[in-house]
Length: 168
Image (cartoon, rainbow, N blue to C red; front, side, top):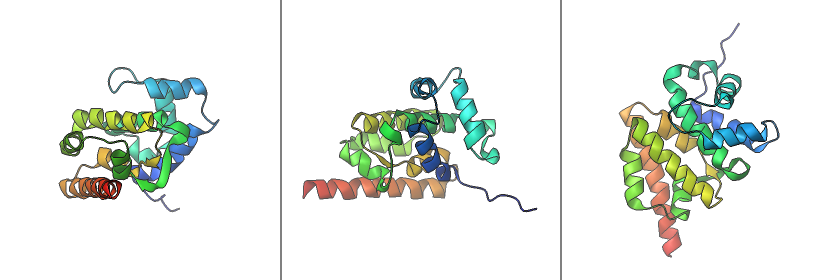
């Protein structure tokens, strides 16, 4: 018997976004996921989603705050808000996300990162822009400094590339 391949959290994003955009989740649960705060009791919908749709190796309680942030961010997006062809940095540039806010986001960690990331997701959702939320997941779940720096660089590069094209 072979063990299933371990998927990174970002690999869960397309299916989570599709689920949140479908009729496979009741409207009341979707609303609870949109409204949930990053602290305090989590709605049962979050626990159900994690247990049913997240690989068991990522269900450890130490990851719950990151899943909570990611799932809330995805629930906020219209129709799942997932577009694999539009990087997160580009979407942030399109919503005119302030450079100072981007700098704070990319420098943050732990609860501050989760709070700032969810604020960014709310801004993207308010403009109705779909993007590739896998970088968002990478940002949340990254624990190694080198990996985090690669993710930060990728998001910043996409942000500034798109700003440059918007100015032309």
